[in-house]
Image 1 (cartoon, rainbow, N blue to C red):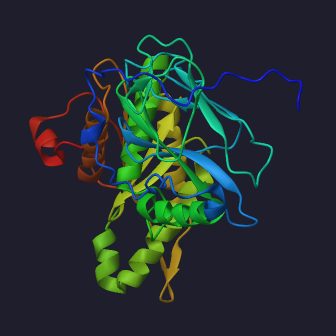
Image 2 (spheres, rainbow, N blue to C red):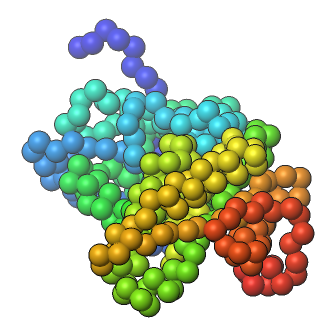
Length: 347
């Protein structure tokens, strides 16, 4: 028997009432495995040679269905941007709210043993309707509440994780270009904007269209149009920084979110890319076709603090670029009209 002191780990806590959350009304439509039956023994759920992974799935809160696969033994959760899982939009979450320890992280083929503990948060951590007071063992299918945010805790083997990765890729990325799709880009943008506002850092959004794209489709066919979109997206990945977020919002509309970038630097980067594309015609059906781009740029400021406002401002600048001759970059100057707002709608 080991001489090491044994930790006091709870498996149950007294039930408490949560005035702002009813767990019974949260439907599990995420596709993640339901909790396993008590009749299932460990030997029934362990496959030989499998590697097991704990993961969290965001069930209620910002970026619902976001998945956090554990890759280390100590995962900290809180509102502080330095946390492993940072929840910026929930003001009821403390800066350092809770932590999860993967106790047998170094034994890859053992079924994970994980505990959760509160880090002295203001509103506490509620596991399965019970307020936890000490380190508490987590089981597959558990749910816990921090602030207004609900996480589900699940354990999957490597085969399930690989399958999930494929499904997530299909759901989050554009099938033609491999860039973030509209929904994913918007979710990432909202998170980055909230972080930039909080830390008082600059951030710019660029919306970009391929000029006369419909004419390319009509003249050369949709296969040629798809080829143009793939080439433009490939060149975007090569030209912009690793920290920039690039997405295809639909059709020939692309978006680039540039964190920690003032307007002048964003405009310079987009103009360089625009000139690079224009200087390298594409060979389509034996002909050299020049590809030109129009772009609109907007930055967060005291009035523009939300994704919808930033999108409408950049779209207004893009509209100006197209109406003033195309093949140019325009920066939003703060003159968005009511027509601009009604055309875009609630993004």
